[in-house]
Length: 79
Image (cartoon, rainbow, N blue to C red; front, side, top):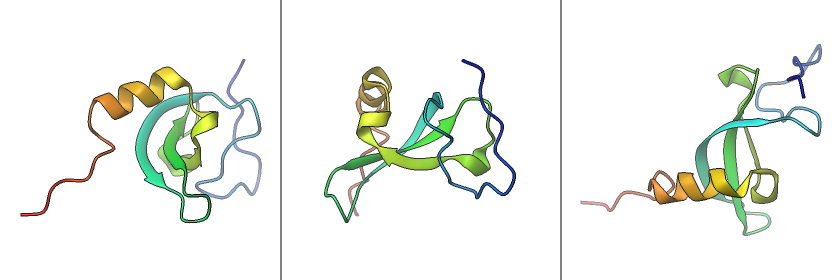
């Protein structure tokens, strides 16, 4: 599937149309609304300005596991 260019007037941080391909996971948080994990992802073919938070179900499991295993989703202990 070819990456879709952002549509005219698309706002930063908006997820591409359904079927967008996740290029890289760059963050993780717990949604205050749903109390479930969301991941910040970069979309294939789109710049960093279009990275967005999405429900974990939209992120391939292998990418979630790799991100979590690398410890990038953990907060640092306070000194």
